[in-house]
Image: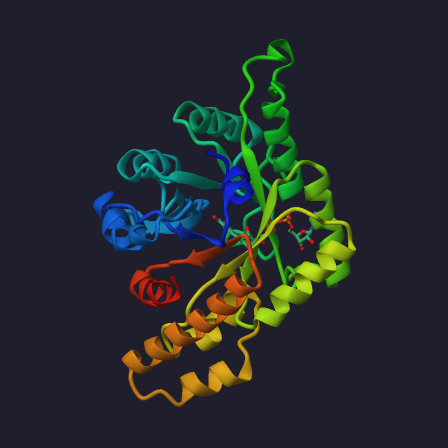
Amino acid sequence: MKVIDHIRQAKDSLISFEILPPLKGKTINSIYEHLDPLMEFKPAFINVTYHRSEHVFKKKADGTFEKVEVRKRPGTVGICAALMNHYRVDAVPHLICGGFNKRETEDALIDLHFIGVDNVLVLRGDAAKNETVFEPEPGGNSYALDLMKQVVNLNNGVYLEEDIRDGFRTNFCIGVAGYPEKHFEAPNLQTDLAFLKAKVAAGADYVVTQMFFDNQKYFDFVKRCRENGITIPIIPGLKPITSKKQLSVIPRTFHVDIPDDLSNEIINCKTDADVEKVGTEWLLLQSKELKKAGVPVLHYYTLGKPKVIYNAVKQLL
Ligand code: FAD
């Protein structure tokens, strides 16, 4: 079922989770162990991230180095199929521009359609670790907007090859990313919103936001979106803080602020268990306020910390 239909039919805020494929070498059971407790909350859908390959230098027998491409977390499409089969839940694979040409993207979309996936979250992806700025793949999409257009084309039966125009049609519901604290490359929020509006005009069904730790940032963002004519549902993305290290890692990685009150509480924690307790309480407070405000979905980034999310959501419902 499409995410947008889940939202239309819901009487209250829905719950959804986002997971990462396991590191190469781990089994699908590591995903089930991660998700089993969270399934108690009957998530409407589960997102599965996509990760581009990285270039690494591998030492050869003769002592010289060769550049090889490694994808550390493959398996997004397979995990979606496994989740739908194992839990009977809707899976939302992320699709990224980086590292894929349009032909490979089209093949992935056809695979997803054949395994019964109804949804995709369309993203540009970040720069590869060895790049300073994002470089599209030769023959690939440059922005999420371009990838969106490719999905919309396939939904209309338009393939890359001219000769199979009007083949079978996919019917994907399309989500896109939004940034309450603006995307770090955008010169300002207004410009970022103009690009978000272009994704909506091209056919996005809903937005999922980057994580934020101050709900006011989400409320302000939704207001600005509405003022700019973006009327589709805006799903808040939520992540708990679970270690002191994250106080610097999260702002550096995701370009979001951590409010003073929260950072002070975490700095004063004596043990990891104390940090988790503060992280859980903060997440619960955020969730309660958002639910009260009638957000369409509470979308949790589980990123290896399902227990904290479990404890917060358990107290919420
Ligand atoms: P875009 O919408 O393409 O925007 C990228 C930047 O370009 C922005 O600054 C925007 O303002 C600007 N821009 C947009 N269009 C144009 C244009 N036509 N001309 C000039 N500038 C333009 N990354 C992964 O690798 N895998 C994942 O699974 C993943 N999941 C994510 C899930 C969510 C909910 C979020 C919020 C992010 C996720 N990311 C993921 C990270 C995401 O790929 C990065 O934030 C990336 O840098 C931007 O992606 P985007 O889709 O927002 O890009």
